[in-house]
Length: 185
Ligand SMILES: [Zn+2]
Image (cartoon, rainbow, N blue to C red):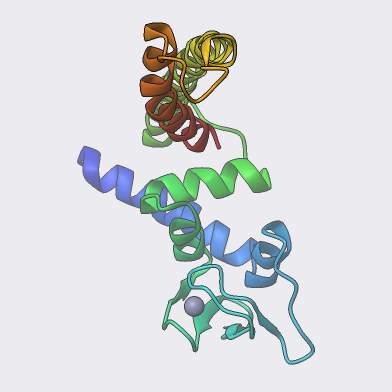
């Protein structure tokens, strides 16, 4: 009887081989919108550059960037692109390139469920940030109204205490709003 790990290893080996046989580097370049130039180089997605220095080689099965040194095969390319593990990358490629449907009871499906749960958590987190953002914007709107209505009309007029309250809080409110907006992207 095969050990669980041995079986898992064997299964992933087969899928990985299948991926490497059917998905070529230029398929990935196309999928990620990376256009090879006349010399076959694409702009490296793993470091900031203007001149393309990443190229496929070994019969279109491997890549190497002469700028940052990133290299590997189709699976490591996807790992680097999404900052995910080897098995997550295999799942992702299977999913994106429709190699074969998910089979129940494979380790892949379990991991797929983990990814789905993570996606759900992220969506929940995003909704929370959205709610906070809406509340902060409303608060900002109210304080801004007070600021406009209560600000001193002349230099000599003593400042209204609500005006001061609004003034003191608008800055950090704007900062908090900016923080959340950058999280939303
Ligand atoms: Zn690079």
